[in-house]
Image 1: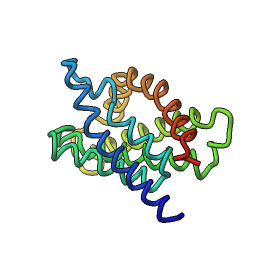
Image 2: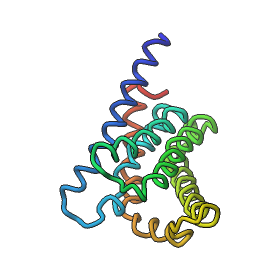
Image 3: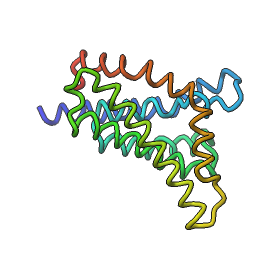
Image 4: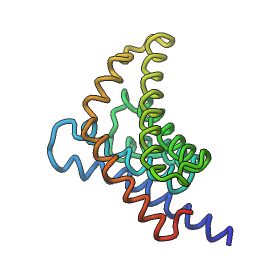
Length: 179
């Protein structure tokens, strides 16, 4: 039984990793300028990974997604890659921790609470990475204002995540892939 569970987790993880590379490309087909920064399509599969597979798989998929996407598609840009890497690791890790380890999955609005807390955690990690890059390493990354700007720019993506992720998690749970 344990082997079957691990096989399902690896398969779902591979699917979510692939989706994290393909979904942004689909959004870019719209021709909307800065569509990735506006709708945050790579964040959706990474957050789902944390919910569906737990914090370790979520963090690993959060790490693999932007690196693989960079090498396959050239996006995100090399300058943005380290910051997005940190942000997505924290999204995958925190969604798994809040949902599974803190047992919010057992609460009435646990998915939404976990999602909002995870989005906050990821953005705080992103801001911290920008500040550290500037103050400690002398890299001009924009600091806290860059994080605020990214959050404001990504408001539509944040709304999209709140609208789409809870029903996906409900469906995965109902389908027996999530306990």
